[in-house]
Length: 379
Image (cartoon, rainbow, N blue to C red):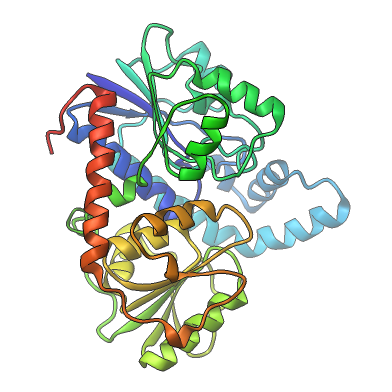
C-alpha cells in the first residue's frame, strides 16, 4: 500500500524538515510505502534560485513582490548579504530531503498536480501550516488534495491552520474542499474549533515531531558540539525580550551562551555562534543544552521532547500552536508573553508529569491515525 502525502517541506527551516521526517516515519510504521509530493510554492527555493547572485535577487523580487524602487534597492542589498548563507542552508535542506524521503517528480502548481497526479492508494495532507491562508497567501488547493483521484480516500494528519478565523469566502471554500475527506486531524485546539464553526468534525493531535520520542530523534543527532554546559538561543525572528531573557538566565545559571545562527551577524560578544548547522547538529544542540530559549514552535517541541529546561517567547502572530502544545503537556508557565515574566521566578521543570501527559497524547494521536488508516503500527 502506498500513501502519497503533501506538506510544506521546501521552506528553509529545521522544523519544516523534521516535521516532514516524523510524518514519513510514522506512515512507514503503519506499513505504508511513502511518497512525499515534491510541491514547490512560488516562494520556495530551488537550485535555479542560486545559480548566480542575480538569479537569487530576481527570485526574491518575484516571491516578495518588491515593485517600488526603494523596495528593490533594499532587497538587492539584503540579497547580496545573504546569498552565500542562504545557498548553503538550501543545500543542507535539500540534502536532508534527498537522503530521507522518496520524492515525487517536482510540481510547481496545483494545476500541474491535477494534470499528472502521483499515483497512490491513499492521499494525505499535513502537517505544518498547510491551511494557514495568511502564510500561504490564500487557499492553496494543492494542500487540500484536489489532485487526488476521486475514487481514493483523503485524510489530513496534524494539519495546522495557525490563524483564528477565515474570511467568509475562504471559510466557504475550505468547507467545500474538506467535505470529501474521510478523516481530519489538526495540530491546534483552535483549528479544531475553527473547523467546527464550518460544520467539519476534526481531532486535535500532537505535532508529529512529538510523536517520535527522544530515543528515535537521537538516532539522527550528531555527537555533542560542546563540553561545558550551555544555554542555547534558537531565534527565528528578532526579539529583544528573548535576548534579554536568555542573557539573564545564563548569568543566573552560569551557563555559556550558544546561538544557533543563520548568518555571521547579530551575535553578542559573550556568545558562541553555530552558523547553519547540519540537521544532526541542530538536534545535538537541542538535546545537549542545559537550557533553551526560543521563539520557534518546533524549538519548543524539541526542548520538551528532550526534557530540556526552556523558555518560549511568543512572536507577533501564529502563537496558538505554541500555546496549545504547552497547555497539553502542562507547561503553560514556560511561555513568555508581551506581559513579560519574572525570569528569576522560573523553577526547574519536573518532567515526570510532563512525560506522562506526552505519552497519553501520543497514544491518542496514534489511535486516531490507526483508525483513519485502518491499519496497526508496525513500529
